[in-house]
Image 1 (cartoon, helix red, strand yellow):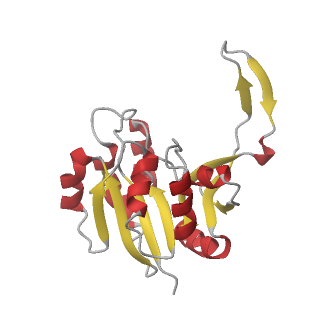
Image 2 (cartoon, helix red, strand yellow):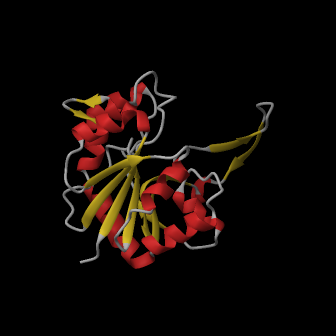
Amino acid sequence: MDKFSVIITAGGTSSRYGNTNKLLEKIFDKTVIEETVNKFLPFESVYEVIIPANKEFINEFKSILTDKKITIIEGGNSRQESVYKALQLVKNEYVLIHDGARPLVTKDIIQDTIDSVIKYDAVSVMTKTTDTIKEVDKNGRIIRTIDRSKLYNTQTPQGFKTSLIKDAHEKLKNGNFTDDCSMLEELNVPVYIVNGSYKNIKITVKNDLDFAKLYI
């Protein structure tokens, strides 16, 4: 059986959410971060879950995330730095990287990502863009309508052969990438699509939490 590590990012400040850490908000009886982490723990192929966390909340995360598979570390000053720090601890051949604020990811999506990364080495969960997209100049004037037939919205998890994504992080260490697949794109390494779900939202503002409750 191929062995997987999972990195779940939890180092953000929730600046767009409000005065509380969105990962510690409750969806009924569980916090957002618990709902997210619990989606990955049942997989036999997942041997470890590494969570780079905001240092202000590490103790709270440790008090609620007690499974023996879980390791919680202090994150960095950016998402890229946090993932880089977590990658130094990854022991397995493949790694999934997922947003802590995406608690609605399904077991089917995770399994599809696992299966696809074994085949392709680098994959990202994505959904086809359904809205009409306009390019707008700095004055607010519409310049053109962009052909949406080739446009996709990026979600997580993203999956990688560990050696591949570690190499990308080393080569682009001084960058400011907010998405791990874009690092491979920068290096001209092919990345393939895994079909996601429009329900697999990232909780960013308070209304998103209400949406999550409906589906949970």
